[in-house]
Image (tube, rainbow, N blue to C red):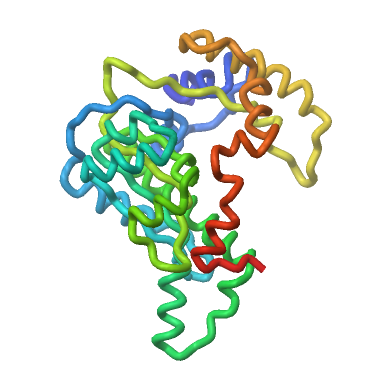
Length: 273
């Protein structure tokens, strides 16, 4: 294994998780080097970087090749400012030169069915919505890999759903088209470097043949310590992973408006049978 792979592995999992005996490839090392970037230079993206990333996104797997997603690219500062206000006033939305809003897009298939005189009843079913949610996530992650290979940084923006109805209005979304998440993109500010956030050990999430949670408690306890140490090193409150995660599940208040998402989707024409 390469020294870089070993270093990335230890940053991701801590020093006491055994490193596998593997000859790593450049793609795996690039993916393992991912970190969330929340501080950007005002330097524009290289010419063609957006188009290359979208081509990478469209090269991702797509269920039945239905391609049930779209993306809106936003560079206008005034529009970024308005969307930032709708998404918990996150400064990096305003600061990054590019904001992408990824969409679950049934509208295109609905219009295709109407043009061809064919029924599209299955757009009303929850499974089709899940297909859209899965496909847009896969596509976006391909785009992220492309951006990061070009030296750019990103942060996913779930808060773009906090005020989904207002975001839909700002972006002039047609019926049967819904906001999935946002993505800020730009060159990372070297004066405010981002670091690799540790994850649960593979032994906690990788099950062989059948689901087995027998070692989960021990693995989570270890990760709580690793996470707290990372928080302290970042100058953040020294809290465990459990302390950071469980409050997000405690009550609808923690969803910051996303508890109304079903109503918003229904207004956009989604039935979710």
